[in-house]
Image 1: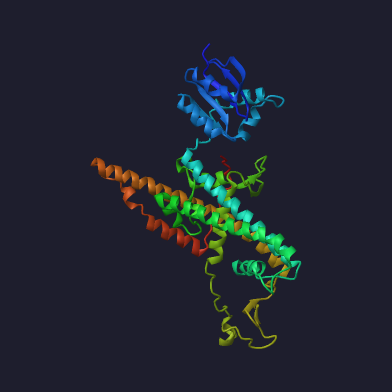
Image 2: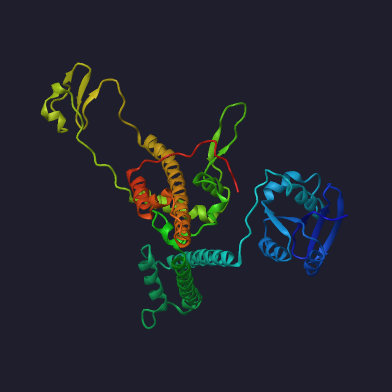
Length: 421
């Protein structure tokens, strides 16, 4: 019987194969060593191979695709419901073989070597920055025990490094210098390595037109202008759901219960978008306070915010020292605890919705890139570009996105958006 579908459970040394024919009958259940995988699949006719999108999955997907097979990667969380009972390699391979045939399954695109190299640069850059932060904190903590405290920022750490490396009469005790000089040397070495990775990331950014257009969005820099293939998403809302910016739902019986954001998907990309959205909100100009409106009978003094007289009332209005006329019985003051609680509730929602807006604008710019490509191909073939392609402009989208970020109008995601990738 010819094998048509195979579920392959990946591992470091031992791989498990579960193959079925066109009717669903089990044909092969076999364990393979690492060196036997390519030899086994090279002897098989073309078939559908399903794997979990885990470590080394993209490498094996590329290798098996070279042999002519169709390879599909699936999120492990989507495969877990198909495990019948128990947890072993054979049960996992059978579950993968069953899940790959489901029409509603969401598949993970196979990354190329270039895409993985770009991701490695970002991961290494983030790791080195975290190591640099650890070294700085360690150096500050050790010197604080000796009474040496410097200001925050680069100037403060430079002062501490100069104090450690100083020789002569003002030098530290020999035992202290012997303990801290390795930290200083490692910190300087990390700074050089971070600079080299920054140059590599900037070079990749300058070589990509789509990345340069994404950088024009407020809150998106060179680091944040890296994203997966936009063709995998239907809209910016799908992208926001893939990153994990939609509310986590626990709805039942027609009653919607929405919690915080789901935090699914790529944590690194979500961190960059949240940091960029927070920077946009901090840089947004605050609306100026206008003069309070006063009751017509209060006179010109009340409209200018001055207190016309203690206890003066007119009808249902009472004159105030700071706000002019105020309706009697309406509560205007809040305690400091209430104001702090209100800020805690409003600021995270503003950041999340700002990140969602940034994600939607990113998808708009990617559509501009594809539209320009279609226009270029149409001109080369002698065809007239479509009217929609002529209307799209990166400058217009940049202007509109900047206006949305500076006016403070934030639109929430639809509560039913719960797509995950």
